[in-house]
Amino acid sequence: MPQQLQSIAAQSRLPDELVICDDRSSDATVEIVEEFTVQAPFPVRLIVNSENQGSTKNFEKAMSACRGTVIVPSDQDDFWYANRLQVAEDVLIERPDAGVVFADADIVDDELKPLGYRLFQSAHFNGRLQRQVEGGNAFEALLAHNFVTGATMAFRAEFLPLVAPIPSLWTHDGWIAILISAVANVICVDRPLIKYRQHSGQQFGARRRSIGAHLASTQESNNYESYRHMQEQYRLVYDRLQETFGFRIPQRRMTLLQEKIRHMSRRVELSRSHLRRVPAIATELVLNRYRRFGYGWRDVIRDLLVNLEA
Image (cartoon, rainbow, N blue to C red; front, side):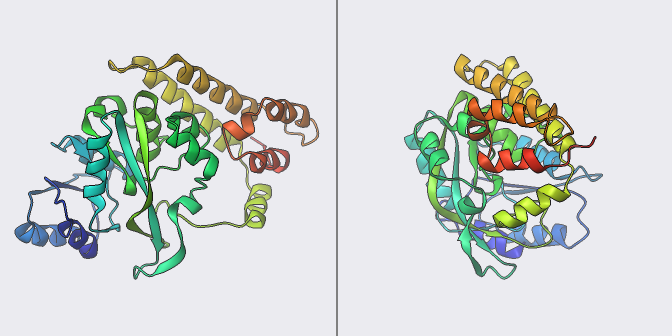
């Protein structure tokens, strides 16, 4: 954490404030922050939870306490490049239609040594999805899967009434990205702005997996509940967007969201028999839903092989 705080203090565009929400940590986090507060060139506010709330609710509490017009989330082990805030601010000034800006990151180990790949690679943020984002269709791209990592994100605080509270079924970054993309543009910065640590202690990581490893885990896992989980996630998105909070949502996006939910419903309803599920998979394949709303052929193979015993 000291390295993280030092990288924030070294920004070419200093933050207007730093809000830190400690979720009952058992290490020296509070003492480190208190020491940093004395020398920080900007206001620092430390909030210590009375009881553990978990990652998502802790982020929600910290973001809700922010007073600025732009919120820049940060994990406890990020390391920011010196232009992290300046780039985000420049993009949001240049693009008043943008609600979110996110960037790539260098994946590093505990000692901040590069591991030889970047965040976009591990997040499967491929050329097709990048073109959709560049063309103003980030919402459609995010219906395939989330590729926006909170550690590289900045978003306008005016959207807090839309995104809070964050449901427990979602991580904060995925929820924020897809909701704001429904009502505003999302801008991608195609270069690293932070070093993203990859280590065993992370709740969520950015590991690369081979196709063989992916298929092996598919055959060994029971994904019935995970499919129901995803189905419910997007139903929650639909319910929240129906409330709108005064934001205009194009009908086409709501229609796409309904189609995504139908796709997940078909996957939940797949037969327990591998052979009998083939017609349903073929139908979704012909409708191009596997490609539009997931990982394409990788999901087709998963649905053919996965154990769906409830």
